[in-house]
Image (cartoon, rainbow, N blue to C red):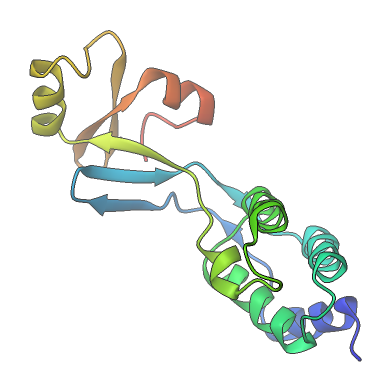
Length: 158
């Protein structure tokens, strides 16, 4: 049976670890969502967390880890998001063994709104100019809660 370190070395030979430099902004029905995770994915944390998953779910085959590591890289995971995803699956997996999607779907997002959406929230007394601030995305301003902006270190321009 292949060890986790050997699987990661094979994966690293084919694809280098990457830094998640872009800030992932997704359009939703109610506005936009911004992932709070940014940073790089390191080999040290990949090894540590793959070993943690293997210890928690010993029945998983080595091929599972090859695909999981490949998908962590492809989806632009950083160390913090991967650690949180692994801990979340260990704490909440409803079945004897997790699926790849249990790990890969994990994210934390902050809501951002267009000016029109923000004004609608203000008129409905769900937001105020005192509790929201604007951030620039390309040539457009979006509105985010000041608390979320401070808590997650969201820059003035994304």
